[in-house]
Amino acid sequence: MAYTGIPDGNLWRSALDGSDRLQLTYSSGAVALPNWSPDGTQIAYMAADIGKPWEIYLISPQGGAPQELLPERTAEADPTWSPDGKQLMFGRQALSPDIDIRIVDLKTREVSVLPGSAGLFSPRWSPDGRYVAAIQYGSKKLMLYDFKSQKWSEWLDEPNNVDYPAWSSDSQYVIYNNINVNNPKCRRIRVGKNQPEDLFSLSGLPRFFGGNFGSWSGMAPDNSRLFVRDASSQEIYALDVELP
Image 1 (cartoon, rainbow, N blue to C red):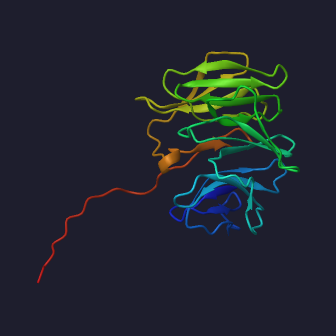
Image 2: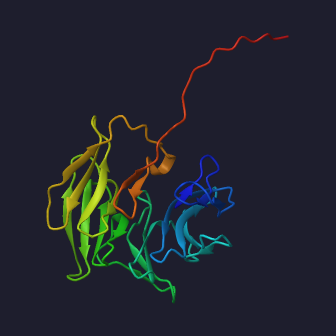
């Protein structure tokens, strides 16, 4: 697994039981949203130094020098791999002035804009390669792009929010969190349907809040939902101080 260390903010990888830990980045900035290539030979992630925009880098899970995806100095976010590992799709940060979704050919480094993606961010490429799910900026809508028809459609208009969507391994569902409510839940929406269903409640789960990116969650290969639990404590102390 790959993850961002707390509080160092660097990228690490380890075995599932926490053994064989290896620090992959040594940056004074921040690292976020690592994503493994389908063949497991590369990790794409976002990184930013102080005062600079987020950009996407590639690195081997065995370590080495990170490779910048593109030379441009514009905000890049949410890297997601094509199923064959030959392309990388990314969006922009939601607060960027001009946001869209772009695809990079990793062999030629040619960049193309996904048609009709203006105003969309947080793309998720389905494992079967047919669909892209993305969130519409300024709304709570989940949009669906079908490569077969080459068209976008409104998939879900969630009355609360769509938080960290992720595809199931069979490309039939997108699972997401619904957190800005009194009873937060994990939900899913099926391709071809417009009504989501509840999977389980998130009430009582002390989730870690990671600054600009909120409380992360994702999917394991066996379709288990992953969360970051906050195991720290917040306490108030009173000190008796003797001053000179």
